[in-house]
Image 1: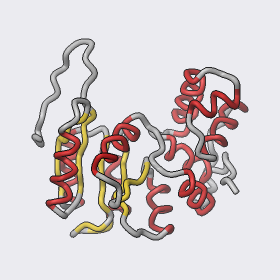
Image 2: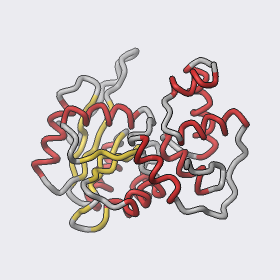
Image 3: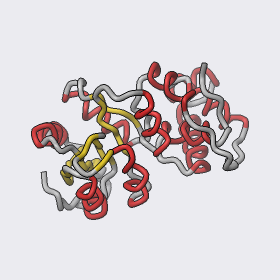
Length: 226
């Protein structure tokens, strides 16, 4: 792993997913980095042990995914999400969770988190979560999704106008359905669903499915499941 690692821009070659890990436990951070760097399509480009260091790494390393612990020496990682994403809006944030309360997780959603990575998960599952986050997938269980979405705060700010099909797709995402499951239910292709997700995310200014759902609920465009 190299904090200033450069990615060779070879024509036709997919570039590795760039990841910055923010955790003040050196052993945890190093273990995560080692697992990720063993994969050909993932590269750890920075480690940070504080919010201040995280800001610097985001600016210098331009990560695609930020793995962020909540408890850091200089503050609450969840409270720092909005500021970190402002430095690189296209970056998706995975929040490391232990036994965080629903209130903490809801705050993370409202701040723009793309998903959650439990500290109890095996290291082998970390790479899958990072790949999903890099693709804008919602890294959260359907059960947790159904529990947290109704707790989001509504905002008086007006939302954009969505098409009826985009509203249908959004509602299905809130049920925890995958693109393939949505395609089957709507009797359309998976590519068509991807296009709808991309369009509604662009309208909402979101870079992940979870962020799109959060913004939609806060702006009154989506009724929480249940």
